[in-house]
Image (tube, rainbow, N blue to C red; front, side, top):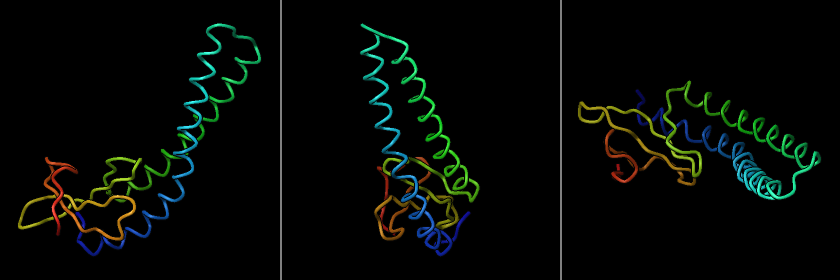
Length: 128
């Protein structure tokens, strides 16, 4: 459970993590496209060079995803709920009028300005 101040004070830290993860997200997208393209070409004419390249791309993808997953686990260890990494969307459990709700922050927002019920999600966001 977070206070509003605790959650707000986490934003700068989350911004730094988002900046760190951002190029990895892009890399994962690019690698997935490259892998798909190579796999399509290999269906008609695969050779050992193509298989080696595919192995290298898959290895690079696995390493990059592992880096992202490590950062995700660091965020989750603090009790912050990750709803999405593209765009980054986080929830903080918060007590409002005696019931648990989520404070909601999305990458690019300067601070936490929204909350939502636990069962409504992003679509149910309301101004604090």
